[in-house]
Length: 401
Image (cartoon, rainbow, N blue to C red; front, side, top):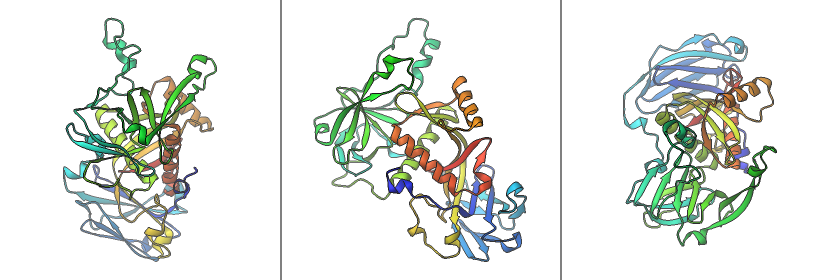
């Protein structure tokens, strides 16, 4: 990737912790570079913390509020084929029930009518749209709604060749984008460029001649979305920051690009999984070409991943790349994924099976964002202990919420 923040490669974890809230269990993995035998590892816990003592020193891992280690519950467990490199321990936790900790919606998912918002470019933080007050904020049908209309209608599809577009002062929410009406301020902050879209199939020359009007930030040239019609903007949630219009407040700039993308995609997958009761997602480009297959495995994980250099006191968390592990355990989605360009035979069989059986709710993102997302997943995968990186020909990754 051209973005240096996206290309920084995190280090493999010296200590990895995954807790499962619903099962109230946990898995602790310690590399043998850190501790040679189970006798070298002592695990204790306090209020919302877990301490791991190794020959390299004592590491304290902060746990989310309400999560407590059950004393004396940490026991060694077989590490299987990875026994030469890793020590595995099972443990138990207590989880206090709380409704607050289950909240995961981003601001975009909680947009309200009759409130005023400002839209910023996530890349350069430029304010794109000033003081937008919506009369209506409405969800669009899910991504494949048009494909099942015939199953519900006893007459020809009344929506054929028709787009669902917002009226003035409407905000329509899709799976990964927002539809907004244009106003005069758009000409000052946005640019439009017509780009060809290839279907990737030479047998469909009509599709290969399609044109896409891309909307970009005038300040940094980042692609933000598309022009659906002369009066309508389509902005992707991964490209903009939406904040309440409060005085001269600037857009949140503390989140690195990869961390922002990770959190937005994690929140969207969680939302779609809960609302649609699905765990399979096909990440696609705007031309409908599948780029990445994602299988959401666990939604109740709490993870922490600490590099060996930090355990031995050779580095600090602040000096690590933005996507690097942290001694603070955080909620995360555990998922399986495979790139649709993967050359492996088993992976190609998986991709063909998903295509033939129409598995995977479509999640449409710009091509560059698809590439960034794959990099985020690969970075997460590279930090995992070797025993956790693959499962049934899929690769494993965690997206932090």
